[in-house]
Image (cartoon, rainbow over all chains, first blue to last red; front, top):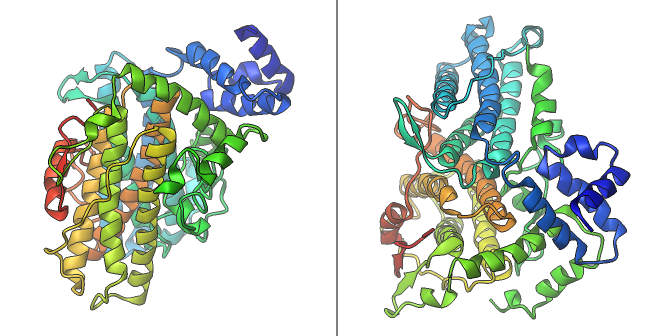
Length: 275
Length: 245
């Protein structure tokens, strides 16, 4: 067996295999189908070793690409909150709610500036800014409707950052002019947890649990689905509702872990919102 | 706990998983575990060197295993705290707050039990002992005391995970699994932190004392700084000096 045979097998079961090779998770998903065809339990381990070699130094490890991906989401969020604050409905919100949106908006603008500086600092070029689609925003005819989108943007942002963490793994600290030494992974994590704080607060403004319990009014949206949906109860191969020595409810297990979105899943969700 | 020994039913169930149609997660887990065993040997990580000479001292050890032990120590502390809250009558807690704190208690207990299992089954290590909490500085019947402590634990947890991510060395599948798991948990800790901060002071979910207003970055702390802050709540003396090294 060699690598090209594996690609061939993938192409057999998944016509788009070659197009998917930029996404390691998609490959795992395709491999699952291959593995199902095999009675040999050792095959996946063998495949894994091929793919670890094949993917070393390809998609993973390009912080410019990862940060431009993050920047696109931050541009979208920053513009959304700018539109929200400029909207006539903003004045209908309480002073406390207005202050919260302004605080969140401030962070998103800071994230944009930070990511732009980091991308340039590591020799990259920032992708062109994107804006929240004006015609979509025009359909949000109340502060409450705008908050729905804010919740989806924040919860999706959390999942999107989480999905790229491993692509920043092992990248040494970078000297960013005007900022100093920055660990790309740590910076991404430090943004990621801020997005989670935003998400929690906006969910609270909407009388939802701060965490994703599965009983929220938007939980059936695609933003909470994907290859690893938010209602997932398995981690590292174990079903945490029953494998931890005592039973835990599916709601508590699902809420205690947020889940990743892949690049393609994120872009499918965010794309229609981009001007 | 004996249920995590290699001869346990849970382990047998996971072995059986190798023979049944392969689910994405379980494939990820056992392929990673194989790579991880090698990586840990190569890193010279020896679980025996977590054995302390002082019976009251607990070393978190070194290498990637130590990052898991570090998380396990913090989750033990958080879980013990919320368990105590759950068993207390907190004056002034609304029914909704009580219900939400019970949910947070479950989340932290799941995190704690998950790390214990992961250390044993995925990292093939020996979990640090059960830590004995010292909550003498907290008045569990007093809402403000409970909320202040909860805020401190959650913000500390977020800063700990944010600082620990880069300490997971390697880019093999096991390292990726560890990092992704930490990422899945830290955002839930951040949700807890934001919720509790809003109870302490409405609108403080991501206030300037926690999120730097210039960079928009949350806090990140080293293991030694985190343990220094957490030590007063733990009877055993925790040595985090080699975590991630």
